[in-house]
Image 1: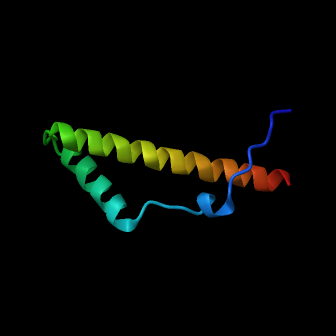
Image 2: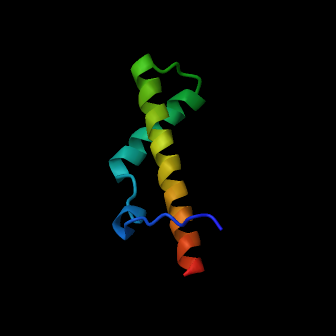
Length: 69
C-alpha cells in the first residue's frame, strides 16, 4: 500500500485569490480571441495554470485521504 502523505489542512483549503483567478481568465481569454501574448504574459499564464492544477490535485488528494480515514 502506498505511503499516505500528510498535508496540513490549511493548505488543502488554499485557493487562488479572486484577483489572480481574474488575471488568469483575462490572459486565457486574450489568447482564445487570437491575441498574441507577450513572452512575460505567456510565462505568467503558464505559471498560474500550473499553480491552479497543483491546487486542484492537492484538493483531490486531500479528499481521497479523508475518505480513507
